[in-house]
Image 1: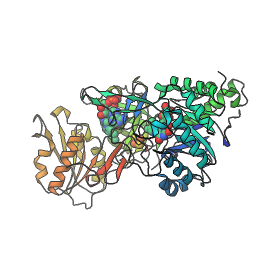
Image 2: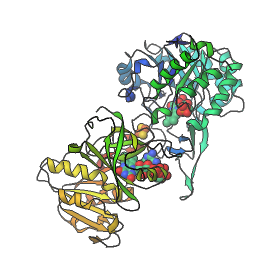
Image 3: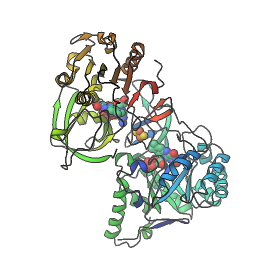
Length: 301
Length: 259
Ligand SMILES: Cc1cc2nc3c(=O)[nH]c(=O)nc-3n(C[C@H](O)[C@H](O)[C@H](O)COP(=O)(O)OP(=O)(O)OC[C@H]3O[C@@H](n4cnc5c(N)ncnc54)[C@H](O)[C@@H]3O)c2cc1C
Ligand SMILES: Cc1cc2nc3c(=O)[nH]c(=O)nc-3n(C[C@H](O)[C@H](O)[C@H](O)COP(=O)(O)O)c2cc1C
Ligand code: FES
C-alpha cells in the first residue's frame, strides 16, 4: 500500500481522486455504485445565490470522444442546498467541496458567507469559467483583472480552503493562474469545459439551444494535460487537474504533468463506478513502480 | 430503487425487420434480474462502436421472470443503435438498470384503458400491458406505424388484450394516424402513450378533448441517466425536471405542451 494521501492548502485528502462539479450531482446519485467514503472528496454542482432554471432543452449533444453541454448552472440556490441537501451528505467520511458560481462579485461573496459556517464544507471551488452564463462567469475567468477581483473577494468571505477553477478559453492560462495566486487562492483547478459548437446539418440549426456549449470528455484531455503542466510551472500553489480523465492511466498522466489531485467528470456518466477503479489503479501503479508516496511523482515532467 | 451495473449476455437477437431488433438478455453473472417496474429504462454501453461515447437509453420492453430475461426492442436510429441491432448472440453488454419512474396504476379495474405505441414506442407497452393484465385490468392497445411491416410484436400484444391498429398506408388496420383511429371515439378513461414527440402531443390533445387521463413516456437526450448531469430536462409546471429520474413517464397535466 503506497501513501495516496495529498494536501490542498489545509485540506487533507485520503487520495487524489475528486469528482468534477456538475457531473456528480450531490454524490447521492452514485451511492448505489460506489462507496463515497473512499473518495478523496466530491465537488458538488455549481451553486448560486438564487435558484436558476438553467438553459432550455436541448442542452447536450455527443461529439467525437466527448460531449457538449449547455446546462447553464441549473440549481436550486445556496439556501436550498444548506437546508435540504447538506443535512443528507454532511456525515460522509470524505471531503464535500461546493462549487460556487455567480454573475457578480457580490453574488460570490453572498454564497461564500452562507457556506463558511458549515462544518463539513472545508473548501469551495470557485467557478469563474462557466461558458454558459451570458454575464459574469465568462468575463471573470478570461481576464486577469476579473479573475483577481473574484479571488480577492472570496478569499475574504471564506476563511477555509479556496480553489479557483480556471477556464481554458483564454490565450494564456498561466497569467490567470498567477493573478489568483497573488490574491491568496489556496489552489487552482483546471480545466473547465472548452467552448465548442455543433450543427445539425439536416435541420440546418445548432444542436444546442444556446448555439455554443462546453466540451468535455477525452477529446479535451491533451489540452488539459498541457495546461496543467504549464500552470504547475507558473504557480507555487497546488494544481488540481481534470479534463477527459477516463481511467487510472489518464489520472497518473495528470499527476506526472503537475497535478497533486485530479477530478473525474464526464467519465462518471459512462461508468458510475470509475472513481473506485482509478483509486485502485493509482495504488497498483505506485506499487508496480516502487513509489512509496504518490507525492513523489507529482510534476515529475 | 437500487440501481445496478450489470453485464448481460445476448441470448437471442431477432431481426424483426431491416431496422428493428428484439434483443433477449440475461445477466451474464447468473444473478437474478433486479426488481423492474413497467416504464423504466436501461443505459447501455455500446463498446464495439468506435464513435458511440455515451451510453444509450433504451426502454425495457418486457421482463420474463420465468426465464430471468429482459427484452429490449431497438430501432436503428444511428451508429450506436445500428451496432446494438447487429450484436451477435453470445455477446456481452454492460447495462445500468433499472432507471426512471413508471406508469401509474389506473384508478379502477373496470376503467377502459388504452395503451398507445407508435413505432418503437410500443416497447414499454408490452411490459406495462402484461403487468396490468396480471393485476386484473383489461388493457387494450392501439399500435401505430407507417406500414404493416413496422407493427412490432403483434402476437404478444394480442395475447394480452384487444389490439387496434393504424397504419399510414392502410396496409393493416385503419388507414391514417393513431389519433384518427375510431377507438378514440369510445369512452376511454386512461391513455398511456409512447412514440415520437409529435405523435405524443397529438394524442395528448385528443385525450384532453375526450376527457381521458393521459401519461406519456418521453425520450429526451440523455448523458448520465442518473439525475447527475441535468442534460435531459423537460419543462414542466414545476420548472425544468430530469426526464431520467422524474420521468420518463409524465402525466400531461405536468407538462407545458401547447395542446
Ligand atoms: C427513456 C428513453 C427510452 C428509449 N427507448 C428506446 C427503445 O426502447 N428503443 C429504441 O430503439 N430507442 C429508444 N430510445 C431512443 C434511443 O435512445 C436513441 O435512438 C439512441 O440513443 C440513438 O443512438 P444512436 O447512436 O443510434 O444514434 P445517434 O446517431 O447518436 O442519434 C440519432 C438520434 O437519436 C437520438 N439520440 C441520440 N443519442 C441519444 C441519447 N443519448 N439519449 C436520447 N436520445 C438520443 C437523437 O434524437 C438523435 O438525433 C429511448 C430514449 C430514451 C431517452
Ligand atoms: C453536464 C456538465 C455540467 C457541468 N457543470 C459544471 C458546473 O456547474 N460548474 C463547474 O465548475 N464545472 C462544470 N462542468 C465542468 C466539469 O466540472 C469539468 O470541468 C469538465 O467537464 C472537464 O472534465 P471532464 O472532461 O472530466 O468532464 C460541467 C460539465 C458537464 C459535462
Ligand atoms: S441524463 Fe443526466 S440528469 Fe438525466
